[in-house]
Length: 548
Image 1 (cartoon, rainbow, N blue to C red):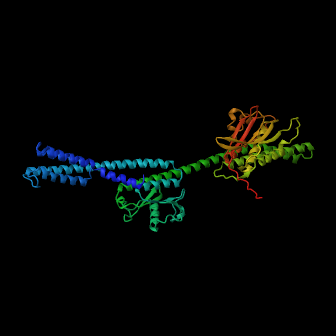
Image 2: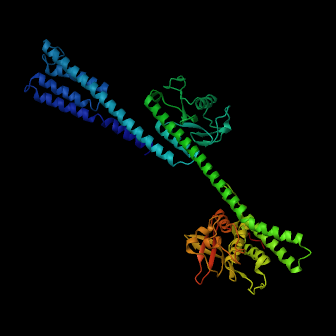
């Protein structure tokens, strides 16, 4: 509703409100003339008193008293002898007129008092509902700026005038001096920089806000402190010290309204409690994050101390054999010992890289080094690394065939916005995992596009034809330090090949989630497993056209 419409509605309400009172007086006077000569004068006077009481339900007190006086005078003029004059014959008639005027005035006073009490009760109920609604809005806010905007809008709605807020910055202690950079301002036109709070605020007003913040007390008209000031300065305080201050500019009538001042201070206090709650929640979340990080570090240290012992023992045993028995070892024995040192060193390097990567990606505030990369180049790097290490081994001494590794890429794959080193590590972990748990199996690295839920993805997968993963472990294998019951208690010739700290797949999931994607396990139709990394596609930069 615009201002003109609101003004028209208020004008109609002003003129229509006394209409029932006018009608009641009109009916009463019609009955007085109609009953003239039919009933005695005392009964006619009671009818006039009744009309005055009914009219007082809608008329202001002054108007009700004035009409009561006028009605008594008119009653004397028209119905009391001698008629047509204000003279009164006899004390009896004078007592009747005095009683009429007294009863009418007392009734008007009592009804006005009840109307005032009812209006005050309605106002207090409305203010209580506003406080409840405002508190609900504060609970939904999650940052200081939005909380300040809510309070500013509520204060301006209640006062009908622009307000200014000064809030301490989150987790900022009250400085010893009035430093502009330690607070944030919300001016009447919206947030402004701390260096220039508002052109509307004078130096005295800014000093008043700082004084209100430091003393955590209100001052201005009706506060019993600095009542000579024309503005209200209200602290935004919780259970402890104040966290901000509000500057309000009431009109002359509003400055005399103690109820309005109390309500506005309650709004500011609710705001202070909400700021304290937000600070407490933030500190609690930081404590939870720190506890989770500490738990991850403890688990990482426990895993390192347990799972790194065996490869270190093998390296030390092979190295000490080469040192102590070098003269008695044959060339083949030296080669096997050197191969053991190399294999165990590579295993240690992989476990260390995955453990450190997992800890880094789980840390809050971690940022990736993103760039536009080709999926083909990432897969090619993984193939080269795997073939250098294990995929190109010839038949071993037991007559087993070498592991087969190849790539299957969809043509014209889009560019990926990613950290290429992390994705290379992810696919390398999946290939190593397939080589450990799917021996003598055909392993394939695949890359394709897919669409799900209206969004396009690039799917990087490593597939094998091994035994797969039991149903109970298909979600838990992506958790840190989980390797499956059969792998945890593995023994025999495959135990050495399957050693690890259980962080490879967890690191893969952390890498995928850091890119906004996810890791999935899919069981293949004819046996085997497919570990898939689903990465959401973002718009890639268009190649610039080269002018002819």
